[in-house]
Image 1 (cartoon, rainbow, N blue to C red):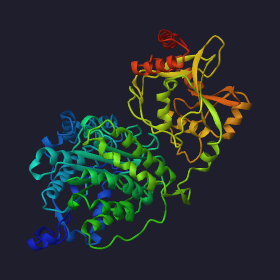
Image 2 (cartoon, helix red, strand yellow):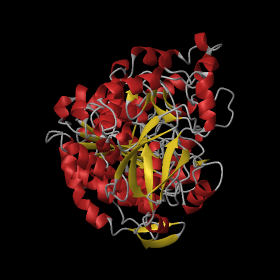
Image 3 (tube, one colour):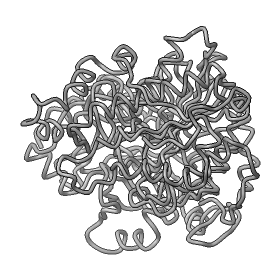
Length: 628
């Protein structure tokens, strides 16, 4: 490792001035692809940062630290013994012939002869700087480490990450060094990808407030699941201590991130009052990153960091995560270290305004926080209830839609479709009105695994009507994110005279129907345009066929026209014809509903006055067992 002259022999008087730590070690460059093929996560990432800092004469003004390998016992605090043993042994000669085969079993992972040492150095280095900041030897620090860590889970390497460096360090401070007085840790993950591993490791731990802002696109962006959705708030004593801000689209930049800081992270940080802040500092949301697709500038990163320095007495540790444009990560890292040094004002400004979808995600996050707060104690989710106060100023945010700056009023399509009434005909759990209102007003009912965000227009249905139709009701899929294990209800979109399905019709606006469609389906649609517009309505009400797939994927992407009631069109949503074929062939499983889901259907059917409880149970039983 190349060390600036004199940095190791800094005088005691200089140490009081130079309390920002930097840790870099060339040994972490030994982890690379087996045949030196190109990979975005490569040694040049940390070299580019270090070279940039050197050319700006930054190390001479910092305390430069040696990297240290983490002891097994510290890594074992968040990882399984099986996983730690694998990473320790994977670079040994005995694995030469099967190293690539083992790597192929993981998600986006490679191994070589240098992977073991690099992984233990990365984890140990974050421990080293975190300990020195916690005990006051350093005011703050930046660990320039690789491989990154925030995707690594308890028993699995994934997403370029071998050990979860930040989680290892946080656990070390909380459990190994209690005398340092670190009782509450705020982990801020601004990497463009969700920190799934870190979230799971502190899911039930109220000592750690985990905050992740990331590109999500309704679960279609890596790591491509629902873990990063804003409804994932923690569990048990950790409920309310997990906050996700999932971008609905790419291209988010400084204005979007700073809006989230001002309206969510900063208010929550004031309430939480952390003893130290650890940042999963990925720079792949930076402008020009080949994987991230967002537009954060070095100014944006410096402004986000500066806002956090007013907490925890400025005790902040940055640990490098992602970032794959060498210029972007170098310039962004330099901007952050300059903030830690506090040697000059932050230069720059944000000319743009947040996207309209940013306003919506912030609002949904606040509503989830406040709706969950009622059931928690004062040390749990209740502390988030104060966030409701930001709703009013938030409504005045200016937004940017495709480059057009404007006030955050509803999209033009919303105003247009809010004037058109339709009947939404439901045959599943939405037959029970309290369950359906979750899609309108937000929240959840008993048995649901997670709450709904609700619609932009939270006006309840104008009318409710019950009718029966000649369609086949059946249950399929193994489980759902809303109800857990068990099938959910579908209608065969083809009408057959021998079939009979009971449906509850809610008179709502076409705008609300679009919001229900979005909540029922996993979609990357950012709602700057409707899923089902007037042209689509005209098409299925005037032509054959009377159905239309409005999304490329999703369980309920097929909108079906059932006729009219009081001159308002009746619409339902179900699976596509291709899905019906897959259910019939066995490619998609047919499965009866779980108890909680079935109980909700029965409540709806009985409450509608069409069937007795016994008749409703028999109706569901037949639909669950009768072959397609």
